[in-house]
Amino acid sequence: MTEKVVERIRGRRPTVLWLVAATLAVLAGATGLLALRGGVQELSSEWPRPYDPAKPFNMLGVPGVSVEQRKRAEDLLVRSLAEAPRWGDYQRLLDDGWYSLKDQELGFEHIVLPSNFADGRMLDPRYPESLVYKVKGAERIFVAYMYIAEPGITPEDPRIEGYAGRLLEWHNHSDVCWKFDEKEPVGGVAGFKLPDGSCPVDGTGDAALDPRFFTGETDANSLVNFGSFLMTHVWVVERRCGPFSALEGPSRGVTSRPLKERVDICQHRLPGASDRTDTP
Image: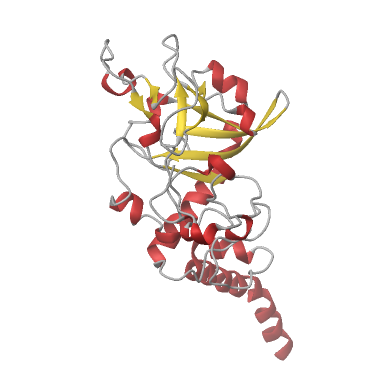
């Protein structure tokens, strides 16, 4: 009789373990579930944290971040990684109507689909506004999404400020000079503005997008300042400064926060950050 009881318990063990694992996953949230695969990271209050999509990663323990904000950030990362394979073919996307911002000389090239800019969808990896590719000669490797907020949304908007709290940093590129070609609906990067806000290259300025993409009108009285849009990255490759980090150097963009307070860059990699502010 005793042997039969033991066998019954052994037979139920997988079910019991599955229930325990499922309970832990629910309690931990999406990141907790990812972390359970291969061991939980040591918890820390520091943010950003080094990120590798091939390894367990969590966003737990960041001060001032609510459970709801953390779960939204986790969900954004999980959804973005799941959709990443569909964006690997750079040339096919250009053939399908995407436009390059012609910034490949900076080491990364952004492509955009203007019709996604004001479509009512934000932070949707099925309909991203911009994609980022690592430049390796003639090769382009998909490395990140650059999600762009709907036109007119400000940093104080709850959809921005409250979405993921201090896990996510939103920036703009009001410091970029654009060259607009009337033969194309999208301009290209022509450099960065001088300290006085002017562009060093003649024929460049703030204009970058033909507003007919947003209004459906046939006449464009003025161009849209692409630099005024709020943007944030989600990386699908390893990043020392976290999954939502900005590009480095001049390409990091502009925020209203002092540079030393930004959570989308690695502070130790920016000498003198303590006395600099992130202004163009």
